[in-house]
Every structure is written in structure tokens, then in C-alpha cells.
Length: 330
Image (spheres, rainbow, N blue to C red):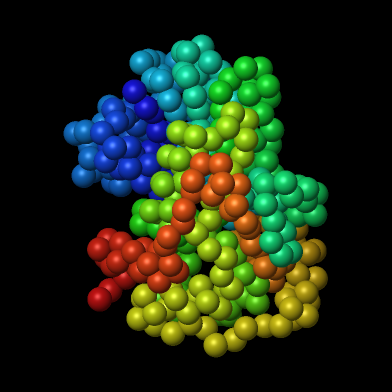
């Protein structure tokens, strides 16, 4: 039996479907009262396990008969004020799961981390980048790095764990309140004031699950693998999203020097962003001006990762999903 944590979320729901397509017996870990709308179409094909990563006793029961775990559960919020919540779920929740997995005799765990845990380069990086978290006040980044460090401790103690670090996931079932679904909705409603001058690494659902399954099957114990479909400028990304949504992208693209002034103006608000949920902080704006790109040669060479999705494909399928959900009008 294969257990998927975070199964009702974007990453988890795509993993579940890919495993079912391979004929695997799949159990899904969900919170009590989770409607799990992303799993409605496969609800009768999976074993439902109700548990909370922050409740160790519930995890003991949920892991009965489980041989492999895809740990995709996590909290990704753009707010510094959510630091304590993200550390609780992303770090302590992972520790609780691994303790339970070790006691249950789980054979292998794939921990879904993030490129944030690798670090944010001003250019292009791979898995060996020197982590630069001290340069950023970004709670999500720090929580994912701390979780990876705890994962490595369990691995050093004998557990068989592999780590996947996906880039920004733009796919159906994405977060319409805080994530890329929200960005696309804002673009459609013309609520985005400008195009950032930097760039970002992105991945679509098809490439993501292909990479995750390959890492589980062939990844080397204790190793981390970056997964990304392509590196794109924000100009390319927003133009592609606009085409898929039938709207034009913002016209204004500030220069890097302008962005530095915005960062300087936002910096005194760091304490405020730690207390109230503001989406933009000085370091978020800094990132928007950087080309945060990654190389995937390790995953290609060691596990056969072969990304195929184009930007048009991954934003197109996400736009069609938003349309089907009536998040956007035809």
C-alpha cells in the first residue's frame, strides 16, 4: 500500500492519480472534514486515512499496512505572519510522520521539499548550491529547509528517504487563495500592477508526477533532486498566462533599480509583516527582480527525469481547470 500525504492538495492529488494509473493500491491521508474535492472522481478507488500531521497518535493508525509514502503535505503561505504555522506543519509534522513511519516499518519515503530549501540563486543553480537563507526573511523558505535537515537526520539513522525539490508548480488543483491559481485570477481580473523584471523556474503536473515517481523508483537514498519543466522570465510567464486566459498582461515592467527602491521602502515594514498577513514584503519583491533558475541534470541522469511540458501547455491546462471550476467566466 502506498500512502500519499496532502492527497487533497495540488501535488498530492496529481500523485494519487498517477499511482492509480499505474495500478497501485493507494491510501490518502486527509484531515477530518476535508471535502477533498480534487479526489472526488477517484474517491471509490482509494483507501481513506483521516489523520493530522500534528497528532502523532492519528498517524500511527493511518500507517497501518503502508509500505511506501509520498509525503506531499505542507503549508505554503506568502505571509511572514504564518511563520509559526508553517514551521509546525512543515517541520514538526514531517518529524511526526517519519517517527510513525519508522515504527510502522515503512520501506521508503519520498519527501516532497521545494527549491526554496535549496536556496534562491541570482542566476542558475543545482542541488549543490550553498544555501543562502540568511539573506532572506522568508518563512516558507526557512521552514522547508529546516524540514529537509530533519529528514536527513532520519536518513542518517537508517531510514530510506529520498528528497524531491519541485520548482513553482502551475497545474490544475493549484491554490486559488494564495498560490499560482490566485496569480492567474488576479491577472484575469487585471489586479496585477506590473510584470516583475526577473524570472522563475516552473513545472507542470505531467512533468511533476513523472519526476516524483521516477525518484521514488530510482532515487538514491539520502539524495535530493530538483524537478523543473523550464526556466522562464516573468514577461514570458505572464504573457503565456494572458493568452491562456484571453487577457493581456500588464504593460509596466519596472527596472531593477526601481525594484530596489521599492525594497528599500518596504524594508521598515518587516516587523509589521511578521504580525499581519501582508502578501508583499521586501524580500518577496527582491525575489521578483532575480532570475531564480535551476538545472535538472542530476534528476535527468540518475532517475531518467525527462520534462516535456511547454509553458503553453502548463498554463493552458491550469486556465482550463479554472474555467471548469467557474473561477473565471467564459
